[in-house]
Picture (tube, rainbow, N blue to C red):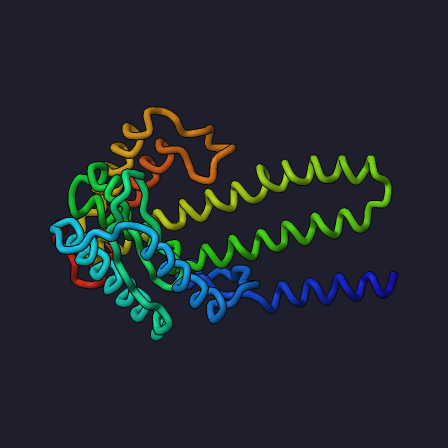
Amino acid sequence: MKLKNAFIILGMAGLISACATNPFTGKKTMALVPNSQLFPTSFAQYDQFLSENKVVTGTSDAAMVTRVGQKIAVAAERWLNANGHVGYLNDYKWEYKLVDDKTINAWCMPGGKIVVYTGILPVTKNEAGLAAVMGHEVAHALANHGQQRMSAAYVQQGVAIAGNVAIKDEASRNAFNQYYGIGSQVGVMLPFSRAHETEADKIGLYLMAIAGYNPEEAAELWKRMSAASNGQAPPELLSTHPSNDSRISNLTALAPEARKEAAKFGVTSFK
């Protein structure tokens, strides 16, 4: 029993020591995979993705993606520097690419590697709409959400392994696997993911406002996203994302705060 307790204490100490601080919330977050390991892997995966897909260059849309991305990156650095996080972006290698793909999607990998699919441009509709999308995706990277999701997945897997080792009875072990799998996903991992999306919505809204884009456009974007989905989204409880209605309501309520945040940086007119 003493040996078992020692392992538990060591495991807890490991989790506590493997923490990072979210610069936007000040909260401690799990960081079982350090950025020194995560970023190089991310950069390599990004390069491989670009080599396997058609990157759009030399067009007004490609130029817009780069322009918006650069403004969002500058806004992020201004906010971080002003809030005591000078040097936070030193290891980021910003890159902004438009990829020819009809999928309505965009993403930012850990370390600042961004892809926007051409399929999302009819939904973003204008530069401010694109800023809402890119601000949100950059926010995921800045808040280390990818790192946190990987860490949470490791913990989820670790608990599953521990349960299978500890439970000797086969019937009980099968029941544990069934209920733990469903319970940990619906009760922990999905809410964890939705919380990240809500957090990225808020951070992204602030970034787009500081970059000079009208934060009210974010809610308008999600109205168009909702229309584009044709009601195909799963119930919020079973989704990795908040419902479109929840996001629209939240972004509408936060827009005045984003304007106030931008004003701290001398930004009072918006595109």
